[in-house]
Amino acid sequence: MSSVIGVVIIARHGDREGYYQSPTSYAASDTTITPLGSVQTYRSGQGARARYLGNGTERIAGLQQSGIDLNQVDFKADAAEGQVILDSTYSFAQGMFPADLEQGTMMLGNGTSVTSPLGGYVYVPIESVESDEDISLEGWTSCKTFTKWTSSVYASEPFKTVAAANADFLTSLKPFVGERNVSLENMYNVFDYMNVNYIHDATFRASVTEQQMEQARALANYHEQAVFSSPQKDGIGNIAGQTMIPGILEAMEKIISPTEPFLLQYYGTAYKPFISLMNITEVGIDGFVNYAAVAAFEVRNSSGTLTVSFNLRNTSEAAPDGSDYQAYPMFGSSTPEMPYYTFVENIGAYGVNSLGEWCNKCETTDARGCDVINALNDTLNDFVSPARTTGRHRVSPLVAGVIGALVGIVAALVVMFLGGAALKKTYRRKVVDASPRRRSEEAESAYEMESADRKTKHAEI
Image 1: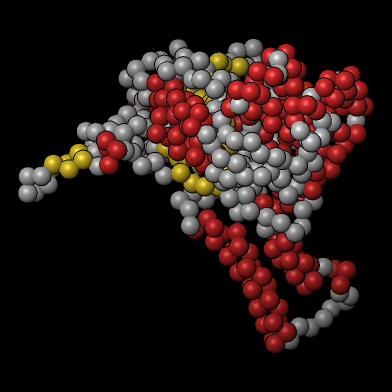
Image 2 (image 1 turned 90 degrees about the vertical axis):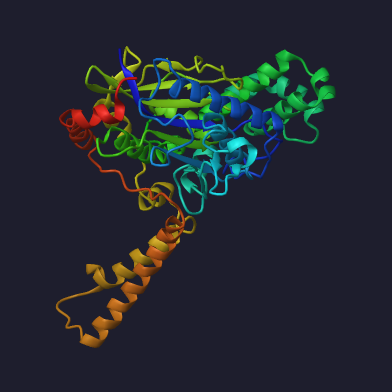
């Protein structure tokens, strides 16, 4: 039987107030988490604690149960849409690493006993990932190729066919959504408005049928699946998952390293990366996941062999014992677990590994740091492009100095722009090696060779 030695968790935020997002660019307005959303994500964290820190078969050996060891875990949350994702992550973290009265109490030298606030509240550091500083959790934002893609989806014959078949139903929704556009192109916003009011407004809930809600959700699912997945895994429709892949693989590398204490990576996101990642990994799940849903890439030790499994809990109400995670085979495999190096090779081929790669893929030149990269490229091209020079030209020391200074200034600006934000954070995302299979095989070899060290880190409990 295999044992979990570490996990990468991707979690959707909990219930929130209404918001709007552009049907083409997916630029979104801000929103706020609700008390229900906080409860959902807190219980989701409790379920994860029961699964990975409890006494069951999925317990991660060595993961500190009392308090938190910051060398073992890392939490990141998308800062978009107001603070709904960040606040959801705080709630999840408190469910997984709850207040610890024993750890939060101490005796002073004068004999006074002091307890930290809120019964030993455990402060879990969470990195807020800003979309203008980091592409990893919002690959679609300001991506011009993605905007073109959404327009092409809406112009496609399959989309038009679905729109025509549901025209009468869409028209029937007008009394429920006010002045909102009820076209299929705007279906996510239509459903979201209905869903938010169905959850929170008793009058609205009484006026709409369950069948209407189910059909609206089905159309919204069709819409989002069409937009955030591509038939080709490297297609732009999968960009929401492609930019997350390097971080997932880097976390796994740290998990399997005999010299690293790292065991758990958490990413708080919207629903969009789920769709793309599930499409890339071929797990056979379409549409957007529910509030507070969790996907877990578990790194396992199966009789000395490293494996990876994909597990999904697609409910807003988490089971207290963490038993509601369901495993799904990936990449056409017949079993839920697949060899680690095979997983890395399969998924690593589709990762967007750098800002420069993202800028090229998205045809973006004026946002998210692409303008700085283009300025550097233009400066270097001015001095080295063969098309701009003929024959041999002697460059005087003065001119050479000016050239060097200009290049140095631009390079410094790039470092300041792209690295400055990272300096304020505890984590820097590194570029994933272009040869994932070679790298993962070396890691697995190290895993086997350092078995003594592994026993200390991942001993069976």
